[in-house]
View 1 (spheres, rainbow, N blue to C red):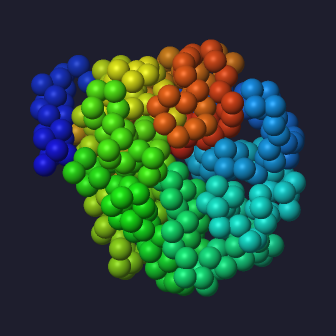
View 2 (view 1 turned 135 degrees about the vertical axis):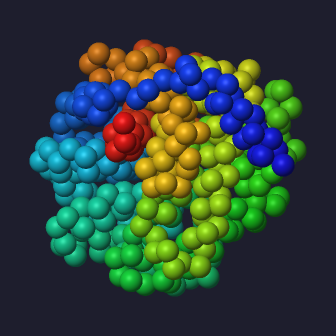
Length: 379
């Protein structure tokens, strides 16, 4: 009921404000925007295998961690609309530097470790060399052979790992991958925390067990972290993009995806962004592009596939994209308003135009996913 009321309000807002709705820029302008942002990063990181040192934490990570994996998801999306050899070579070089392996090897069950596999499989689909995916497949097959299904205890993991199961299932025409990923998805949705991390009444997700009720935001609302919900949106898009229509649980994924889209539409800010706390604009209310990018990615994909009504969702996509392109992208391509790593609205605050986050790669990945999908939209 709450979703329906909010969605109805959003539709009424659209009807009364359609005459002032923004338009998306030309495709070449969208491409120019994402190109300059990506160029900045590639120039800053000419060696994709170089470890990532974060001064604020005085610690170094290998460059196949989840943050960099998300960047490469975005880069491959960019490559899908602009087949520059430099992009392909940059991704291949990154994978080669890590010997096509996962951060913690083939024994890992951690979705963050497996996220790099999404790009490994994308590259395998271009040039079918078995060693590209051997380590990834070994890791996933070990999980599939066990009875443990509660690994995705934080919703970010749905995006990091669920698309990998889908990709392998499609690649090997093996529905056991689809069945296991549903078991894990359903455990997160219905079991983790007190009664699952998905609130069907609001169409949104709590990030993990620390944020389901009785936890509340300062204004008394539930805590729905923007980027956490963005990860679920991205996961559903990436899964539904390739999952066979015959899959038993496809309709449920579609229903969850549409419920999220309908829940997100009415809480978009007037300036085009979404708050880091979706139901409490007073809790670190400010511009932020990672959640916003992932929501645009989901909405634009829905419009492009006919799953969403363009008349209703296009204004939200245009407003958000125009805001980010004009207000978040620096002239040299650096992205402002990126919330750093974490799990809730208070992380890395204040989120500012000229503040560099602890990791700047995943924010760009989210932005490239959004821009690539916006590019595909009919003008």
